[in-house]
Length: 115
Image 1 (cartoon, rainbow, N blue to C red):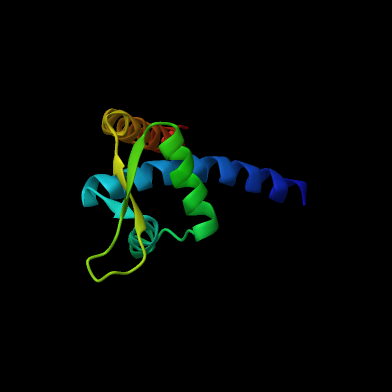
Image 2 (image 1 turned 120 degrees about the vertical axis):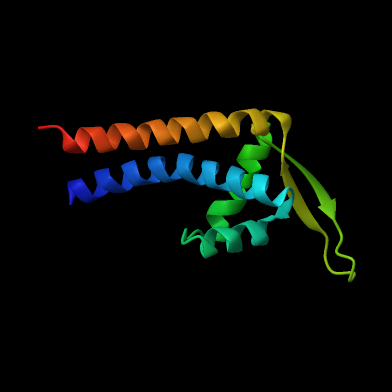
């Protein structure tokens, strides 16, 4: 039972950073997007996430200065949606995060092959 709790804690921490990276990638690709569209894009990529995780994540990334946002009303007159874009800081941070992730993956592969 203890191992399960330990694993769940590790998974939560690992997933947090990974989701931040994935959200930045989605927003770089789309230029501007709202929460539900980000959620659907992540799901199409096989990354299951719920709204209760995504919206606090977007809010935290906005507060950290990685994103900018603005309210956009759809042309069909629907409800306004908060659209997010990468800020200047987010644009600088993303390639660093990608490099770190790639380096970590390479190190993991090397470590798995050590004898």
